[in-house]
Amino acid sequence: MGLTMKDWEDLVLQIAETFGGQMPYPETSNDIASAYQRAPQTVLRMADQVAALYLDGTAQNPWGMLRYRAKTIPATEGAATKGTNREKAVERAEQRIRNELLHYDRWTEVEDELFGDRGTLRQHSELKTRMNELWDELRPLGVIVEHEAEERSRIRRERLAQLAENKPDPKPAGNIEIRDAITVQVEA
Image (cartoon, rainbow, N blue to C red; front, side):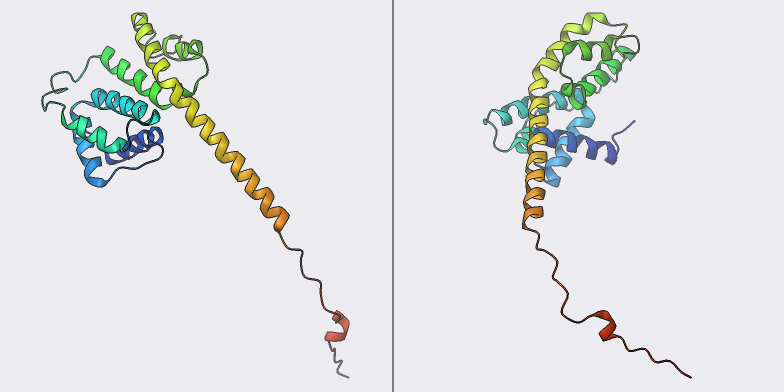
């Protein structure tokens, strides 16, 4: 099972959110995609680390940094471990934390999603600490995304209100009445 272009594009958009909306150059994207196919979890962990560096101002070019780090992944990494059901469940859970669960306000809600009755890790309670640490690490990114969305919404509302205030009044009609402008001829 290979990485489809749609899957990669979706992943790039998700990573770009954590990189302040910056998109990668095509060559950069291709290099990272190649590394991702070999070792997806390693690349995702690297992306999280680079996102943290970007947020604290250490990384100015997050895609370039991720590309550089991805090139350091050995060609054999990930090839031997295509995964047991447990490993696949862990990968899915980590991906969910990166994509959606980082927006949850409380760990107890995340814990229920992952380890509750319908959770993908319900049979692996020994992973709670690991997943909690990942969520704790990524939750600040979720808060930032939420604050940015709120700020964009506030700015949009202000702009719409300003446009409504500055909207010119419709021009009044001239002194011509409609009945004066229309001539009706009746044939006999």
